[in-house]
Length: 210
Image (cartoon, rainbow, N blue to C red; front, side):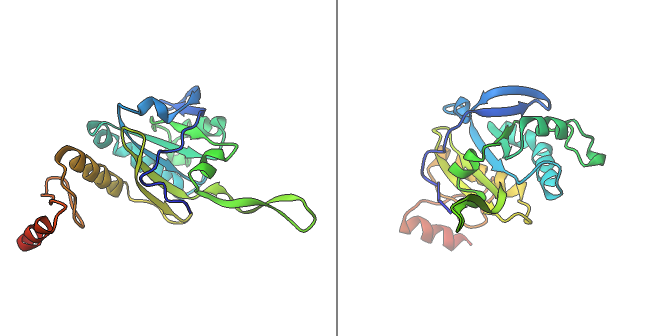
């Protein structure tokens, strides 16, 4: 598993569905560089079980992301047509109707491969035939990307393990606090709390207040 923290986020152009039902071609994260932080997350498949709980949870917190000037973008290996169908299915029927942020179609699996979250890989068998070993879907990867297009935080969960949207927001707050104040954020830091200077004296001062 690659660690992308500190590196430029892999860029791409792909089909996507935005605003709950509008098809766009050549969707790219590049549009946010210099303008917004981005929470870019992968989920395994449309029309599944854990995935809609995460996708809807992100939508339910969109006001929190927007007031922090953060774009939320989801991605799976499904087609844009599958995304559109799921977005137009009522929630009481297993759908995600009402979700407005972009869902990217990674039908070729190249985006998941570039972010190193594909839950398997292609290899040749003993007969020299190409086959896929593992699950041909993405793990639950999440990447926090700053305005310069650099990954500052990543977390990757196995397929059965849903993520915490509140933790994603906490990491946004921590990054923005550091960018604005130059102070680092200690364990369990929450917005509104003090940071500390990244020096021995700063650590001692902070610990002394605990």
